[in-house]
Amino acid sequence: MARNIFNQPPKDEKESAAPSPTMQKTAKLPGSVGGLRDSLREITANSIRDIEPDQIDMDGLRDRLVLEDTSIDELAESIRKHGQQVPIMVRPSGQPDRYRIIYGRRRLAAIRKIGGTVKAIVRTLDDDASLIAQGQENNLRLDPSFIEKSLFIREMQEIGYKPGVIQDALGLTRQGVSNHRVVIDQLPDGLVQLIGPAHGIGRRQWGDLAALSGKVDLVNSAKEVIAALPDDTPSPERFQAVYSACSHKARADKKPTNRGVTSVVKNESGDTVGTLTVDQKAIAIKIAKKDNPEFGQWLEERAEAALLQLFDTWRNESGSGS
Image (cartoon, rainbow, N blue to C red):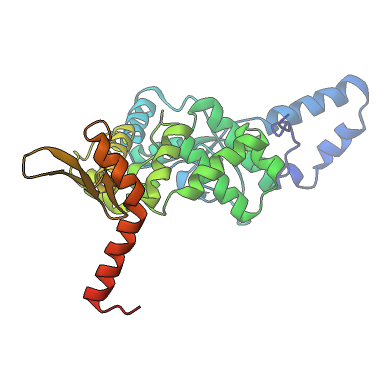
């Protein structure tokens, strides 16, 4: 079960500052007054603050492939008309009056487009807790696509996050994390960035595309396909176009099976004597006994000697020696 990271006591500089004399006196009061004090502190800790966007650093792990797209413009227009309905979450930075984003990157990008302050919850969380909060909030609000989760997992693993933290962040089992990583490791660098997040395209489809990497240059093929598409082509459609083109190319490049060339050998009367089949691997002489049973019986008795005689003739004519 994911850890409860939303009820941790605040540790930012305002809450952790030395208590005032009034607060010291209140701290000595027993019973209901002390409970009221704790409740007020909790309300303060959970209050939403208005923060200037330029005070917030967009650091940490990227869980989205695209931030500057039409969905950001639509979100910005919605916030302009109706206001910011859902706060983002930040944590104090090491610098005064600066914060680091935990989640809400799309909302922050939208507000930066239209101007104004950002409504934000401030929490003092460590890296693990921040990562879990980021992953869980994104899963609840706008589920990242399969390939976005795969990239997120790879980046978390490369940085050194523990398996349990990664599983909590995305709500995946250990096997689920492994399934995402297997696919992303098979895809060449740069391919996902060309296609985009491709919402609705799952593990099997990405896996099928990855399987073509040994037969087709996926990146260059994707560049050619996407260059021919309209600029506003949705990411899932870009994926389908790339996959279709690469699949077709893989089939076209596959060498056809060489079944050889077969010719019918006939005598001077036009009767079929047998067939001769030649391919890159063998020469086959076939005599159908039903067509000429007597000749077939005769050849069967002499075939080995006849083949050796032909071999000796070739050797003498070619000068291959004895």
